[in-house]
Amino acid sequence: MSLKAFHVVFVTASVLLSAWFSWYELSRYTDTKAAMDMWLGIGSGVAGVTLVAYGIYFLKKLKNISYL
Image (cartoon, rainbow, N blue to C red):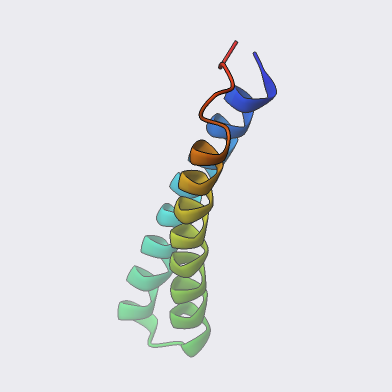
């Protein structure tokens, strides 16, 4: 597995984890109304969006490099 392929897999896993954690914290916020749950959910959502933007940037930058 090349460094590019590993990077794509790792960023994808990070986006999925961030999305899940954001959903989890925001659903907890609806039950508990704790401000920390809201801020963790929002922060995780922002991190996920940032990771998606980074993934797109990375793929455009290395479009001529093979995945092997």
